[in-house]
Length: 358
Image 1 (cartoon, rainbow, N blue to C red):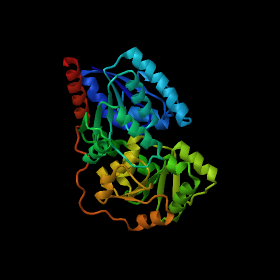
Image 2: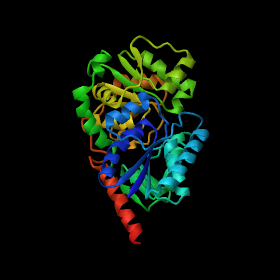
Image 3: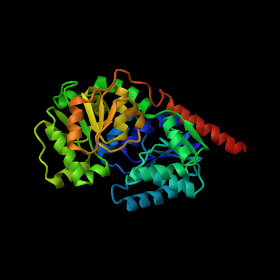
Image 4: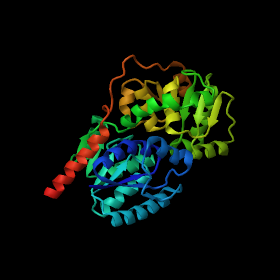
C-alpha cells in the first residue's frame, strides 16, 4: 500500500510517530507536513525527538485565518494526492490540516482513515469541533480511542468502518518517559523540584482570542501560592502581551519545549492546568491530577474517572481546584494499551485487500 499521511501540528507529530514506524515496515508512506506549526520549537524538535522521518513534502503554509489556511492546504494536498495516487489518506485529530487532508481525499475518491475519530466536545464554536465532525463524515475508516467515541458516531448515523483501536499516543508516551528520564534537563534548567510546581499550557482559540477568559486564567495563576512553569505558545504570548499583563514572580513564562522536556515536566508536576486534549490524556496516563481550563472536554472519560476537573476560565474555580482537587486512589485503564498504531495499520491493510478483491 501507499499511504499519504497528513500532519501539521505538535499533537499530530506525536500521534504520527508510532504509526509511521509501523507503516514503513511493510508499506510506502508519503508524509506531508502542512507547516501549520512551523518553527523549530513547535515542529523540528518534535520530528527529531520522536524519530519521525523527514517529510516528503513540507508545504510551509504557516499561520493565518482559518479559511485562507485551510484553502491553501487543500490546494496543495490535492496536487500531491493526484501526483502520488495513494491507496489511503491518513489524517489525525482535529486541526485545519486534518480537515484539508480529508476533504482533498474525499473529493478525489481516495479512501480516508481518521485517527482519533468520534471525539466530541459538543461545542460548535470551537474550530476543532467543526474539523473533527467534518473529517469523521468524510472518512472510510474511523479509528476511535474509546467506546464513547463510537457512541458519538452512532448518534450521528456513522456505523460503517468504525473501530475501537485505543489511543496511538500511548505508544509514543511509554517510550518518551524512559528517554526523558535519561536525557531531559528540564527540571534543573528551570530550577524546579519534582512535585513542587504546577505546569500550565494554554493555546486554544477559545482562551487566547478572548481577553476576558485569558485575563481570568492569568489572574488565577497570579493567585495560586505555588511555583508555576508556563511554556507559552507563540499565539498565547502575543495575546498576553496585548493584555499588558505582568505576571507574578512565581509564574515563569518560558519558550515552548520539546516533547521529551514536556513529558518530564508533566511527569514531575504536582498538578497540570491545560486546555490541550493531548496533555489531558498524558496527565492521566502519568498519574498527575489535571485541571482543564475549558467548559467542556472531548476526553470525558478522564473526568468520569475523577482525575480531570473542568474549571472553565473562572478565576475562583481554578484557584479552588488547585488547592483542593485530589483524584481517587484508583486510575482505571482508559483508551487501551500499547499497540494502537499496529491496529490502525492492520485495519487499513484488511480494508485495502477487501476493496481490491471486491
